[in-house]
Image (tube, rainbow, N blue to C red; front, side, top):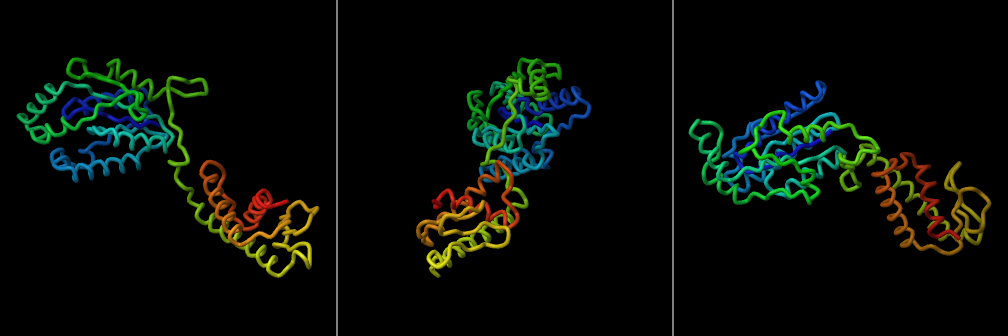
Length: 312
């Protein structure tokens, strides 16, 4: 249904804002599934997860994998982490687009001095906090979201240092409305990301379909090459590919399905046409119906393609 990316400096109030947002979403609909994904839910410590670049990269990979497994059109996923790198937010946006769901960024815009003060108070209380060196490093590398970027839009901004953080906060209410509003053809203020060919997953049965197509098209190519090498273009008019299948014709034909070849077609050209046909069929299957699973249908499609490319 939606993916919400929490964003902000360390100790900026993201977790409290995520909890308020999740509670507000559950209050808006009793049957709405809401889940928060953060380091603690995966049993990962803050300092251990950000002590160096390698460990931090692994953490982002673990969070991204968990989001990829969890996103669906029936639930709202809130990823409560720093999400401080714009390239990483773009990867999360791509996951949402591949799933065909809504996406938004919730930015806790807190001054660094307040974040530093809150982190010190947590250290004094023995609560989860960041070491000073790690905190300063994360603050320095933070990349602020920009609503002009599609992976940072729509952007909901909250100021925890001066705004009251409750379920009824105006920003949280606005985000809840955006995430739960029903969408129809006339809706303009809510954007549901649409998957593209680049982000769609391959169908489970497509591998076998492409194998059948590869084998069927090779049989057609072999029949044409054999007919031409045997001089069938002079001795006879046509050669059959099988019962109820198109006929390879070397002169004009009145049948519905045939390859009307008026010139000699070499093997390199036939191989090139075959590769192009299989490639086009594979690309079309991502955005349309899957390729045919039986050899006869594949042969008919390939014959139609050859008629357009080399037919008279």
